[in-house]
Length: 497
Image (cartoon, rainbow, N blue to C red; front, top):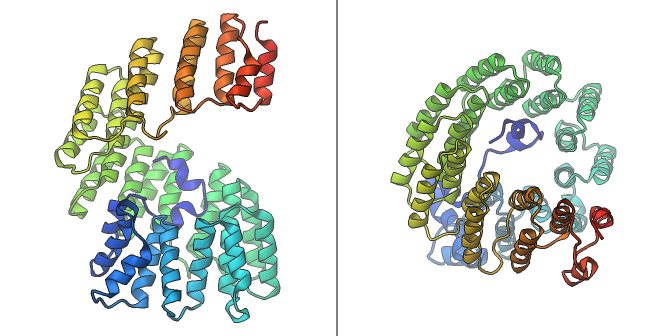
């Protein structure tokens, strides 16, 4: 996990600490509601509908309260299962459960995320006038900000202001988050000034986004002024989120001593009861290159939970690779292999990439061969890692062997080479002035349905380097239904004729 992600958006870290792994979804839910939520979370894998799952549950019979359903909606929403969460609200409406403005707010948000902003707008327009309050107005504003619909967001804010619904910091926080995502950091400062004019009190989230805005401008003095102002605010306490973001800002600025001081303060705060809190700590200590602290937090994570997930091992392996601790990487990977019940190829990719970065080809091959034996899944990314490595070493035949292996695993067009893989191949062909080799590679890509304007640009650059004429270029572009981009037109002009 990159430190930049912690401070790139005003809402990313503050609003949620989550992963999309289905296994972790079930673990994050309290035991008393685990059974219903487990059934709902398994729909992604096992299939079926939310309505049928809920109907079966109540027919067993099971007591099912509205509070229980609301908790399931929030958990599904947290893990990006927007349509399933929306399906629960639909089921509640068909059962004539009493819906409140809180349910309307959730529906607006879920509609925007699952069906688009137009669906959310239509639903809001159709609400009874009594249901159009500052909360439902605010929900639509949040949708506009999330989707970066600046004009609509500002118009909604203005309408809310006319209705005297802008009486707290939440509408301002939404706009701040939008401007952070847009990289318009100065506008965050203007919103804070406007809040002060209106005597609207900020909350911890406001201070955090305000602090982040200065961090993105590399204005550390500005960051520390916000921190001082926050310290003087008797209504707001610095918390885990405050110090984690502060540490990330210092790391980005290269001020590692201040970053570690912030991390020590962070660890004195109550941390979120999720594994992701430990993941953030590991990543932040990695940002200061403090391997000892990384390992201390890793041991703490393993001690805090009854089991360690694939995601946690993946975070740790990536961190050890980043810190170039190959012995620690090997030990951690071996530990994971000995206990994992669900083989995740991403972990093998991380280890193979780390070995190849050090030209430890035999160790990388050993991991790859074991992965093939442990899992029946696809290993496209793993093979691409080898392809790029061998091409950099000018070993085309070995790269093509892995390309053949990947192609043999393709079913129903479920893989296309990543852009960096394509670039690595064409860089090789261009350097070797091998237009025939590039053409052969394009035939493979055509079978994979991944010929496009960018690919043709790479092919033409090879022909230019080889000083060869491209045969029937316009006819080929038409046959392959390739859009004639500006770059492609320019390359055709300079190709040998």
